[in-house]
Length: 460
Image (cartoon, rainbow, N blue to C red; front, side):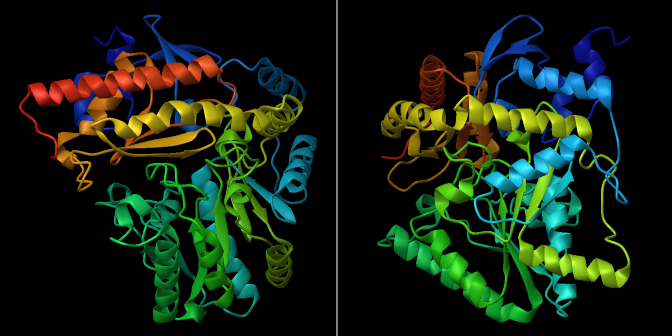
């Protein structure tokens, strides 16, 4: 009965972040192969992968060195676990490399398979640490509205996106959220960026005081928000936020799952935006998406507390079957070598400037309220009224329409809330960056024409 790939997909798979009922009608676009910054569907159509898959395929789709690294390890030791005093050379080497390049001094690395697992783990480690300090009541977690930290039970509770909570009985109790640091959307009339940052720091301070500083364990933040619509922090934001956290002995967890390994133009988003975290979570570009792998980097302060606690209990009762998987770690080692030896991260600055030159003029388009970005991470805010900043109603799915027209043009981008996001591979060429801007501009123009032809009106 199901004799085509599309029908077989509809009959057998659930697709995340998808309208499941609509999928039964629309069906999938099946990607068949990739080459560099391009992907090709099963009809042979070429697309510029303007999102690096899901922010992760930083080295494109055909990096032979990563394939060879995986193959060598598969032929040597395809799997071994990391529990109970066991180890493999790739996991040891990758740990050493991560500690060497960490943005602030870190002591140890703990591996998982996904960003969600890494952030879940960071929550558990914060709780474990404060138990070791004799402060078991310090367990509440604070994050930001529109922040994205994963979709498992714990990480989705950290996440500040309502559609990840609705009818999943989330967030769990003890997970709190403060204002998204998006000046364009959340700033008040007459406020400067620094005024806005001050207000948000005061809001955080007031929440911690209201909850009780002795009950708050950690604050999670992406250096630059990704899935929340590419939100760049306002000036002095993290400087002021970190003062509040230090005053109340609240740990800072930098979620570098998207921003790590060059996306912002530095090794880490923490370097770009001045964070000094107690823990760092990373994934995605750690292996350039060729294997699933994530890591939590911990400060010596945290590790010392964890060591004491595990000695008291007799064991550190945490871990995953595939954590520190030797094949994934071998690929991670090779990815870090490529970033360094080939000057990939150094090249992001120039590509980011090229992207800025193309993207920033889009702010004059009738549908665009704001263009924002850093390195190779950009967002375009879509509005119906440039003067009032009114967005299109959510049920119109206007951003999805723009995304789909871009896809017709052979460009993969992503509609996220009221923004369209871009995160091309770090190995993209200047010409490919130009093509991303050109194809997106055409999608904007065609979306505007269709809206006006259908009787729609923009704000005056």
